[in-house]
Length: 136
Image 1: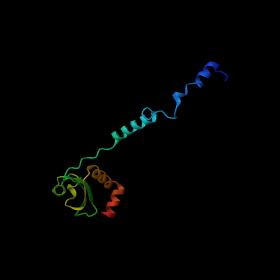
Image 2: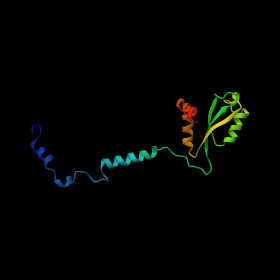
Image 3: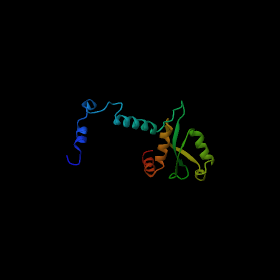
Image 4: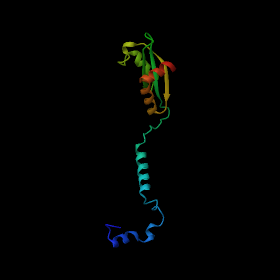
């Protein structure tokens, strides 16, 4: 070949064959195996943490309906449903104090706090309000 000194070309081509037995290096030292291990360790660190479910600890997502104006609703989340409804009706919650009294329209119990907050957020979205109006 042009541009290559003949001695250097032969050294490159005639390497001992014992270094090239098999097409892949051993799995423990291969770059692909190292990348897989690194990717797996990154995924385990990025997984969302689930809250440990405490015995008897539930989160309630609830929908209140105003007794005086049935078209007015309020969506919230709580640990103690009876106490929270009493606070809404007593005027202790600023957002609902001007429209009291309230009645409990629907509630859903969750053992997983993360899912409860996600469902409450969904119910407060436009598609969630449409879902609640039609289904709940």
